[in-house]
Length: 110
Length: 114
Image (cartoon, rainbow over all chains, first blue to last red; front, side, top):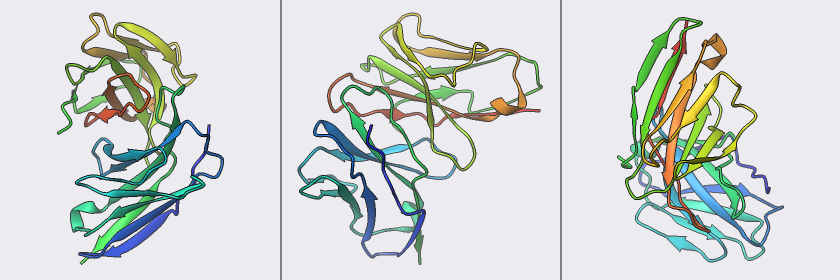
């Protein structure tokens, strides 16, 4: 399975865009990129996923590079409630579990 | 609220006691997963069911752990003879099987073994 590398922590000012990077240089052609976040003491929350194309939903945008070796999760207007640990996960169709790493701790500051 | 519920939310027990946790998935989901999360770490996979069949177990799932999903709906996770190292958050997730399936997590059960 492809592994992911994320920065340990990041800060973002409230109201600004938060751009969270993820490297997955060994990703295979049939592996999806998923993003989850976990707010303190809660279960992980699904944000978005993609295969090749950029994706957008009501929560975030996912930008995947053309070579698929990295991606960026964009929270367009971060709020204090977006403070959480963000996990980037690469999952193949033959894998049945989500393999979480340590994630990026995003702190949104007023 | 994802629609996945877990009970209890918190459990304190003494070493050596047995504990059982319950997970109710989103009703139309045919897959159900159990994960464990210790402080400062990401969730780790324990086991999963497709309908009532338990299809995969992690090596983390020692023989003191057993999980069931008798009617393909709710699931239980039992830990026998608990140890202090079992203290963790136990998370349940459910999904609809498919290529790009998305797992939706419950709020978790936090276990403390004294």
